Image (cartoon, rainbow, N blue to C red; front, side, top):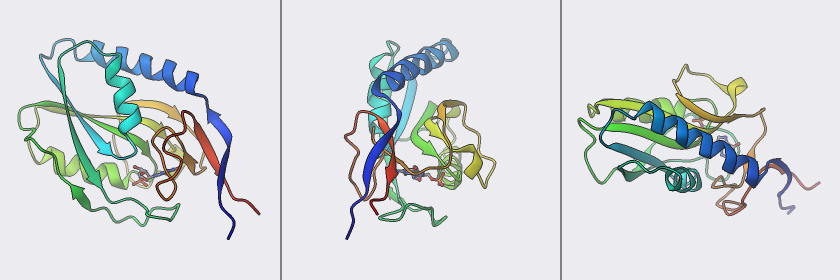
Length: 178
Ligand code: 5GP
């Protein structure tokens, strides 16, 4: 059984770091009037993005985590989303930013934004490290996007294939071994 490899580097660790610093500065500027920011990270893929993002931010903020169903071993979306782990704390009245690894069809984010909006946060925005605009099937709003990429399955920097490759410090395309 051939094993896939992640050899084509699309975004180097340096490029990712620089872009995330820029995103953090933008968010700090946009929320300068807000006392307290609450970041909701989507497990597990968003973890590296979250930790690098908040390390360059100096303003008061808190973190929480939520887990949604993923593709399992498949590289395409089934369109079905399930809540696997809920938040630890209520978000009512808070200024919330969702921190997500990638927006593809947009179905996952649409689902997440709907359930979080129903909990009446004071404001709700979304930050995604990556976006594949050509794959979008729903019109979901993402205020902060790190990089727009073409339609290839990517791994690394938190993103997995079958739970592997999350530890790569860069983003790479997954190549099938013939
Ligand atoms: P969507 O619901 O927007 O189609 O997909 C969102 C989720 O699918 C992401 O949170 C991520 O878990 C997964 N996903 C989408 N595209 C990719 C990809 O290229 N690589 C990896 N590893 N996961 C992806």
